[in-house]
Length: 272
Image (cartoon, rainbow, N blue to C red; front, side, top):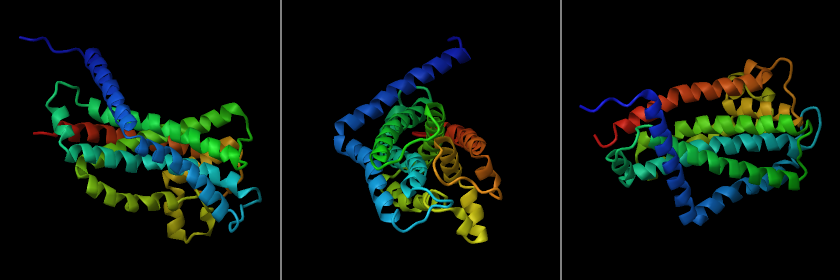
């Protein structure tokens, strides 16, 4: 009779398998350079498009340059794209039977979802670096120094990783890349219904509540605060905007607490 593997051994097994699948995801991107280039160029295009098209028409509250006001919102928008990119990729693997093949192999149940989320995290870091470079070229810069700026990027990374687990779960549920593509436009309002591009103060009451409690708004407000960019939160703001750093951490913890077990359990049913 085989002795059961201790918990520490199972964790090492799952971590090792997860890293292997992270490498598999990154290898797939190397074989599809067009997809990787599009993922990296898109953030730079958004900086130019939104900065120069919207910048001439919108006045920043309390003054300041609109591109400096906009950049934290664009960083938040890129972080939220984790949901759509991971959903499409995981649904594509499920529709082509790749998930069934993984399920038939002696891998830890959490390894495949961990690999998908981990690979997206690395791609997300590259996207943020490209967007930061584009922002510097158009005149944006952090005003409060290196450590607060590093804190802002760390918050973006944490929330993106948590959101990517939501994408993993959606992809496992949809199991069809064409259906997953149809979901992308439905997720776009989550980024638009926020303070990323305009203040929420001018929205109708019910819409402002949704925008103020949107995690994209909390991440944008936290980034503006840590970067020292224009758009400081008003004294009568809702709690997530008055305490944006805490709100981002709470949102991240809540998303991970919900979607990690859901994703692992849903993947565990694959191939049954």
